Length: 624
Image 1 (cartoon, rainbow, N blue to C red):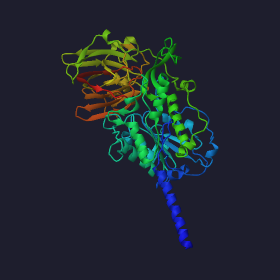
Image 2 (cartoon, rainbow, N blue to C red):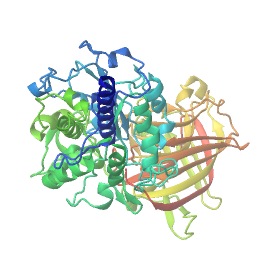
Image 3 (cartoon, helix red, strand yellow):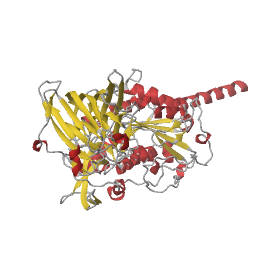
Image 4 (cartoon, helix red, strand yellow):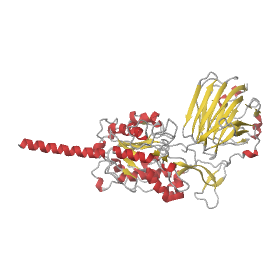
């Protein structure tokens, strides 16, 4: 009888323990900092109960010895680093752990030349946690959706370890006791097939849905590795009207992306920080002051009554009073990134008894403010450059192209030579001729060689048209090399280039060695090597693959399609072989916030004939 009693007691204890584990696994918490409703996720014992073991013993060790912190270069400092847990938390022992971030441009790091540069919130999270125990690895990438991120190297690094493409640092694979913060949504809304995911509720098992990708490509894999996934809904887009509805809060004609994330979190028992609700409330409260969370691409001269007036140096080495201009309503600056990280940290600390990452949040953190944190967000290397979009009405066109889609609208073409020409007198070294009867344009510099595409500056000589930044388009042209200067071989042939260029800004017959703007090019650079497709962004010139030396008679078909911040650039040889490059989240508003410019050009010792130019506006560009 005594033996039976013992068995019954053991059975009852087993059942109670099983019920506790089951309850912990099924609960979730959605945190919006104003209504922490719902139950929470599992305790530390269930967080680490997955079958997979960690690659790094330090993440599962009970020792208080810490790993070194791995925080990217965009981390600003806020507060101290000491652990000041409350007395009620003394029963939780902190051990070394790694917090991984995956997500889009609102999460990732940047290398900007903006006046108020872009910073994702993943860059600032380390300010609010105890880095004696926490290492932060930010794997997020600009322009990616939950779907397209799975094709990236950083996605594989998350699960297998390797080199973080953002920092070039070697990181371990996510493992037992680690955390994965997931911040997608902005680009899942985009309609292109590579990124779009459907925001359907209760659709975790519907292939290709937002919930399906989030669960099977992120949440389940994190759980299998013994890590704790945490979902974040996307931050709002700034609205100058102060009203936050529709696209600004990620509600599209296809569905509500934030609600989709919260629904998944509740269904699968995952902690969810509802940043959409948090930022909507914050922005509605602050109204116009919410703009200071955001990136600004440039500075304009200040006027009486302006806010955030600062004195900086201009490109002519004079001191000028300026204000931020060219607001990016999607991307945040360092101050904004601190605010979002602070909100995440505060939410997690509130929920620390049910999401153990909250125990690692420092208890003495304070909310960022304009007074304390905005100044550090400015780019101290930025120099003011006076710029106005060209007044096309004052120029004489050299030709036009009819929209190939509506067969009616005409877009005028204008000639220009600008950039690092070598002096205003060198502009005349270029000859630009138009044969409107045959639809050809020839750009030549076969006499005195001048101009270049170099590492830090550019020359552009050619024919251009202006395009509204809010439109998508397709353009194509044939290019034939008709001459190469005999002096080029002895005159830095690597700086010779030609092609179809799409650029951020445009200047008319101006010699200025400081022009180094953003552009992408379907064309070739370097006469000796013939690197195909090149671009410049944030002052960095990037060349594509080497082909063969440029030669008289070379013929290529060049095309650029897209709009907003997403473009595909293609170069096709006369034999039909194509080189292509996709540019995602490329910045075309750093200088001219209203237009982009499409230009057929050739520089440095080349003569190139362009023919069969076609162009069409295809629709409205999607916002970032």
